[in-house]
Structure formats: C-alpha cells, structure tokens
Image 1 (cartoon, rainbow over the protein chains, first blue to last red):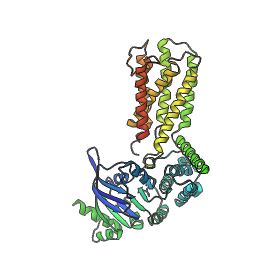
Image 2: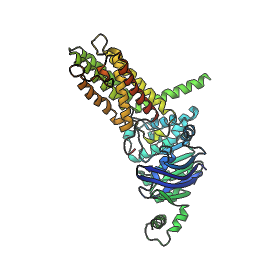
Image 3: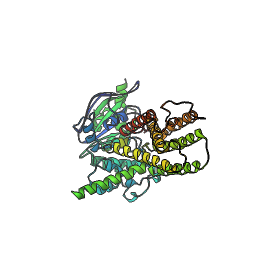
Image 4: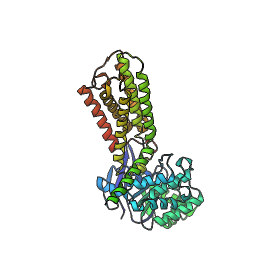
Length: 247
Length: 207
C-alpha cells in the first residue's frame, strides 16, 4: 500500500481538523469528497508531508514521513497540487515546471523530456514560453498540475484540481487522472461529485474531520436510492451518507 | 565521470538561477547597490559624531530589510514538498546578499568618514539581517523589513547626540572592535540564518 494512515489526528490550537482517520490506498484514483471544512485539505497536507500529524501513524510509499531521510525520499517521489498554488509571475510555464523538476531531482537525461511531457499532458505545450502573469485561473491550475506530475510521482495528491477549469478541460483532466492512476496512487480532494464519478475507482467521504464512508462511486450511488436531496444519482448518495452520519 | 559532474554542475547552476529569480534577488542586488551609491553621496556632506553613526545605520538597515525580504517564497506548500536542495538554496542566497551588502557599503565608505569602518558595517549589517530573518520566520518574508526598520528607529534614538544607550544589543552605539556587540550581533545573525535555512520564511495566510 502506498498510503497507510492509522488513527491520525491533526489539531490547530483548539480546533481538531482531523479526528482519528484510518485510510489505506494502493495504485488507482481515490476521490476525497466532503463539504467545506471537512478536513480534506488538512489530510492532504499531512500526506504531502507539509504538516505532521498531532497523533497517529502514517506510512507513505512504505516509509515513515516522521523521519528526515525517509521524508526526503517520499518527497522525491511525491507530486502535490495545493489548494492555493503559489507562483512567481515572472516565470514562464517552462521555467516553473523545470524549477520543480530540478527540486525533485528528475534525472538529467530525462529533464527536458519530462518537463515538456508534463506541459503537453495539461495541453499547454504551445504556450510553454508564456509568463505565468499572463495566464487565466484555469491555465494556472493546469500549470500546477504539470508541476505535480513532472517527476512521474508514485503518490500524487491533488487538492481541488478542477477548480477554475472549463467543462472541456475537466473532461480532459479526468482522462489524465485515469491514466495516472494506472501506475500511481492518486488522491483527489474535491467537492465536485461528478469528477469523482467519472475518474475515481474509490471514494472516501469526509465530514467534520472523520471519514464517514469508503467504497466505490457505484456503491455511493446505491446509497442514494430513495433519497430526494441532490440532482444526480451520485449527489443523492453523497447527501444520504452525509445525512446519515449527522443524524 | 567528468561529464556527469559537469551535467550536475549545470543543473545546480540552473536551479540556483531559477531560485534566485523567484526571490527577486537581482532587484535586491540593484537596491543594495543603490544604497551604497546613496551612502557615498551622503558621506560627502558634513555630519556631527552622532549624525555619522546614524547615517551609516540608515543604509545598513535599508540593506538588511532588502536582504530579509528576499526570504519570501512565492511557491508555498509546493516548494516545501520538493525540499532536499531548498535549505542550501536559502542559505546561499542570504549569505551571498549579506556579503554583497557588506562589501558594497564598505566600498562606499572607502576614503570617507564611515562610522565604524568596514568592520562596523559588517557587524551592524549581519545583526540587522539576523533580525529581519527572525521576523520572516515569525511574520512572513513580506514583512521581514519590520525588524531592521524597528531597530533603526530605536538605534537612531540611542545614537541621538552621542550614545544615550550603550547596551551591547545596540551594536551601532559600540566601537567596531567591541567584542560584546560583535557577539550579540553574530548570535542574532546565526539564529536568523539557521531558522531561515531550516524552516524558511512563514508563508502568507491562505497559502
């Protein structure tokens, strides 16, 4: 398993953002669903080794992220798109992706092809020399995805990757997700249930810091039979599980 | 073997170049050079004893503020998870800019009546940069200028018409070869340097 999380909690002052989560994930795409404030971003940040858990045990790529050397090895094989992408506006798309390829120690022989392949995969190949300050929000999101996949990560963490993408780009992105999930463990945090239905093999639903459901999108859809809240079958399943967890 | 080393070196140079650009180091270097020129021009005028000390402190604090602000990372969490080279890059950037600042200010004072001379500039600048870096750790790189500028206000008062406060924490009020002041300034610089190398500047809220 590339992700093994056991009874992990994360506290910020008096706020308990994540409450004793246990989760495992192997290769494939796992969708992390939940309302705003459910703890999805905090869980992803812990998996990205940005913040350590307050308690509990984590193993990522068969390594302990609490130790310095294993953490460096995890980071080398990790791709991460945070909810809020920071960037230097003077960089071109190519420079931005190359900077992260260099930081992630992509082998020199593969550097050039890895950078251009990552940019091509998010369909920005013809704009590789465009400055980031000139790009729209959706294009910046795709640049963020390119930097996350430039090292062909074994563990890819994407926080709201489709925010700002138009419908055509979202369809293309879902195809990219399915492709990446064939070899890597991909964890996608979102509150757009249609992304999960189209691209994820498994789904975990979070609410108030805990995971209240894990299963396949089809199983989640089945939970919604007879439930009236929601426009699509998967949305009805989502609402039914949340309602049951809160009752 | 030689080729492998050369390729590694080229990659490292490229990484340093991109890192330096993202931290706006060229603009910082230009500002430091501007401070040195302004100091040289100012030194051509006559000042009393405390004025000479205050004048040097103004330009040292300005340089330190510029250096400390370059610790701000525009990349946030993305960069923190790609991290083996990052401490080395942060350390190199601060050391190179501090050396540039000390060298430029000392050169500006050559042949003029620069308070404390090159040794005084080095001591005062490193201490002020340390303050700025500690501020970056606490409040973020964008606000790292607050420490040096606050120190400038206190220091200017302390030097008013001859030193009115002489604690070793007020380095500019002490002689350039004063051991206590050098140790205190060095400790602040070392503390700031270690903190910024290991942890980096605090990210702005929302990143």
